[in-house]
Image: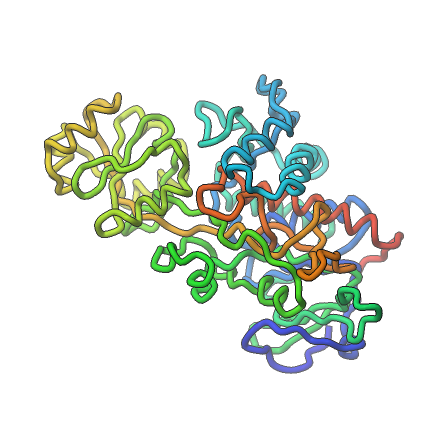
Length: 470
């Protein structure tokens, strides 16, 4: 990989007949080493294909590391072992569409719900990624227990496990490698979508190096960290706290626009109505699903907490000061402490304790009679606990338009680009075009199922055998 100059300020499309001399040739290049990219790399290795993952950070992080690490799937061996025998991909797909009010892309809903169970089974059996099924409660919109997680119950643990597995399998991850140039063939004949030649990536010192590849997977994330794009497509969240990763800069969308690729579901995103302030920590929505409530500064309930934590973000932001209080009791405090993020927030002082409703009203600074009225609608029992929270934007659910094989589609005619794929946050998801369409776990569903499908698509297209890149 030869350096050819300094990094451009923004992602660029370079139209050429070839990459600069000295570019390293690899079968597959993957932009992003989150759950999507690492999953794709693992299944490419299973097919005997080597690839290089480009990760912008000194170590893989991204949205996966910031998530709870819960992956929904129907029909896994883990589910069956836990006694959940009646769940199917069709049931899962129906739940996704019910939450999205029928607006989720049907071809992706079908493709992802069919692929996710085989993907998780294979990750466990071939690569030692040991999942367990969450028990004790259902997340909003799920009719069955289908959330899979590692024993640590964190996205950071999931990412670290996938990274270790990828290294063990022989995948190459280049860190401190920020993709800044997408090279495509010049003067493509017949008006077909252009072929990708390779990728240019910047090093910390500003040098740009190049990889030539037979196929490119954009597994980088969405645009939640790009204020201009948020203002354009998610105006209701323009003032919200962004609780995602800085890598959500919209690079994939910028490249897609320049290439004439289709964009879809840009109004879809995952918000969260339970971001602790000032601690800056996610408070599990399991508290709400098991009987906790949210009250505003007046001590009043203002929405149905069981509808979903994503749409709750908008409801919370609409309250005075854009802050509210999560209210729960000892039983739910014990549940919360089983989640590492909650335990860390409690250690940071997020949880306030009150012996009775009057003391709780004093903590909130609200009218005691209104708070009494709110508590009367619940089964909560003193002593009470409260956490001050706001609404936050976590990650976007819209992006490049893709087919069921994760091939990027051209806007004009939906013709697939010959060797450009996208999945995870770079592509449209299965949450429709609004905040209320997000079903819990849709982000990691798209990432892991999308990485699995993209690897399968590339494996079928690439010639074998493929020698390992040096």
